[in-house]
Image 1: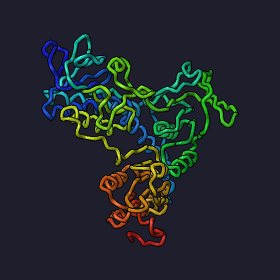
Image 2: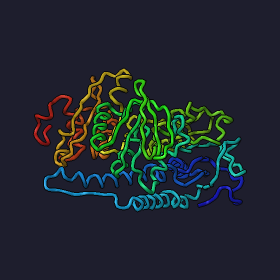
Image 3: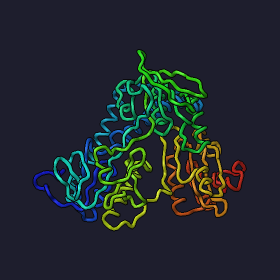
Length: 475
């Protein structure tokens, strides 16, 4: 790993400076390096950014651990099968998670840098400056910059919350001891994932949210998942406003208001999961005349350009599509545009997303509501998972598949899956949307029997037929 502020590189001219050394930063730096550019990659804090350190990797391994524990108890759905899971040593589970994080941070980030002679790495707080980036008292000279500094957990303005020892998604994943009870503030994907994970580990969980669980999801999916959460003993307090939080002798309390009536909710700990805030402090964006949204995120156009010529931004710091793969995609596009003339447009039309609850929520394209709001005349097909042979064989029919299509030309506009294995099926729908396929194309395609993805074919057939009257594998 080289240091671009070391004496041998001080004053060196770079083609591109990348501010942020997470997944987006590495994507931008490697893309530019592969095109022969001299790149300064500037990191501040732990190498690797959110995903590998405090986001995707640690959360998904703990979610899978909780799922494994739950499935032991759920084995009784098969006649003659009995099993029981239990949390024997939560500290050991967390330590194993930390070992995975450390291993991936080393192999996927630190170990990559020596392979690129034209990437120079420096650690320090960066600030935009005339002619480049100021860091550690030195000027990194570069005519083009990419800002990929990511985001952190946002904290809502609830009176008294500052005096409470609340958890965030970051600190919750590092707890060495499980609390007896937990209030989760926020019903988005982070709140939903962590609420179910902790509940399955034996914590008494209450989710508190302003609207309802997964408000961006199709209403059929949100309603169904809410029911499954309640079946697992997770309490949902939805449609409330947050009035006050306070620390108590037993833990914490949150006063909420619904229909002009106050209710006090108590738990040992509070977990705040109300979105993300961009990491923009100290960058000097205002002085550089770079426009920001009301929440501080950096505004970019479809070429990833900011309002300052030569400066680009991508990933969570822009507030758009806050998924690690979209951050990497946007950063790669920004690097290519910065070096080659802004010919590439950011396109999220076929962007798949997954919420790792159980069942999983996997979506791509437009929801029915979004399509109608855009003036599209649409048809929808909703298939219960009880109509999918895979679910019947697994004796787990929780979920549904919903397809949204243009009424006139039958092009697939959106696909939304609630299923235990939904994440492994959504890419088929993403490719269908990307290639402009119709529901007839999906219905006529050959799918393997006894798979969850076969449900896409059945849902497509559902536009014209009653699938209950079809035999196995029939079309």
